[in-house]
Amino acid sequence: MPSAPAPLCLDAQPTEDLVVLALKGVGSQHAGLNGSTEWLHRALSFREFVCLSRTSDRLLSVVIGESFLQQVQLPKEVEVHRDWAVLRLDKTALEQTAKLGALATLSSTLQDAGLDPRAVSTLDSEHVLLRTRQLRTAAAALLRAGHAIRPARRMCTPLPQGLIRKSERCHDFAGAWRLVRRERSGGLAVQEFSGDEGPVRLQAACGLFAEVCVAPIGVVPSDAIVAEASYAGCVEVTKGVASPSGTTATARHRIVDFQPPSGDAPHAALSLDGQLFCESGLPDARYRETWARLHPSQEVVALELVSETPNRGARRQGCWVFCGSHFARVVGLSIGQGLVSGTCCGSLRQLQRLHGEGAIRAELT
Image 1 (cartoon, helix red, strand yellow):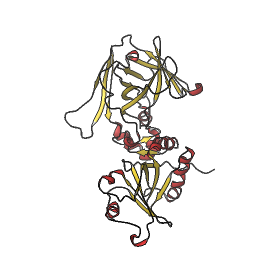
Image 2: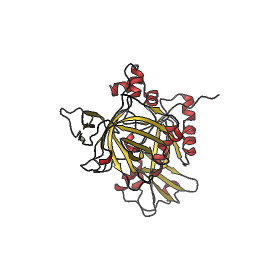
Image 3: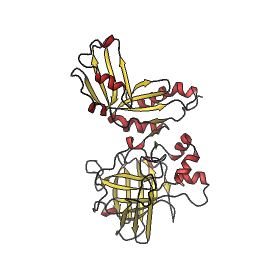
Image 4: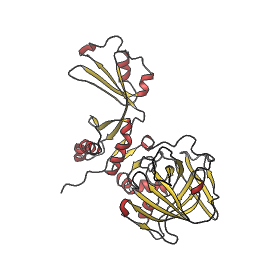
């Protein structure tokens, strides 16, 4: 039985969108290049990704970063096709067998997700071209297959401007909560928590929240790192997303996470049932969580970290949330920075396979 393909780490570089510049009727010695060829010479010296090709039917194509358009005046004959992106695989560190099968592995995964990738190969790298709107679909498929993508900032849903502000949009769900039950679609993979077990979430009316999930006492260090799943972020009420009657549709944006990001801000339908708070993944209730209120008060104070003195180098983000006798503090590198927060991956254990346990431990401890 053939072994599973080795996990691959791709670079979403450059982080800007690409354009395809197309010119028909170009032959040898610049025949067909009416007017100045200065734009073409400048394209070849562009600092980022550039791919130039000419087919036998004399179609010249240049794939280049969108910012190039601000540096040149293109002849009117050049067609500009926008909204392309590239995922790059560096093959230099791969074993020979992995190098030979890398492009086939990536193409098969993306095609199974309904995408039509275009490939550009060099001796030491593979470049997979996709439409920009397909990036998140591609990321989801690649992560499910065990691969990773960096930088995460290119793949993740950006935090809406002005989302973190004083408001009452989450007032009904404000308070201190403990997870008592988690299940996947169809009642599969049920987890139940009792007593002091289970994650604790402190939610403020403005949307800021901190969720604390640490490894149980006695867990060996290697497993404790993987089990560390605390994170902090802000809830957005999404009016354009359909949800069942009597629920509130939301998106949960993470600003600090001790697990690698998946790229999406997950959508969920929220509802209250007495002292219980229910969260169902959208669409199709792909998961369901039940949380029990820990404190009767809905008065919550939340503080966002905006600066630190002395400067630590890499900027950290996070928040403090207080409710009654409960307090949570989650502070760390923001999404897009570092190894863990800067790499989209299916799990921390999978990220360890790619980069080693020591590198992950050094960042999280």
